[in-house]
Length: 53
Image (cartoon, rainbow, N blue to C red):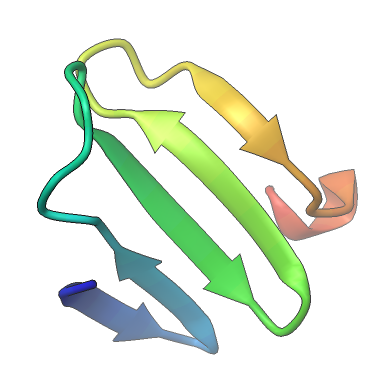
């Protein structure tokens, strides 16, 4: 799982063997989101809405 960026406690990473469209994963503590890069559609999210602004 290569890490692309660590920023303000957020970790942005991907899995090399994932399906298309390629998603990006974002985690911070026990919160997590999965976002499709091509459409920016959030396909999984456990972040509180105040943390996404």
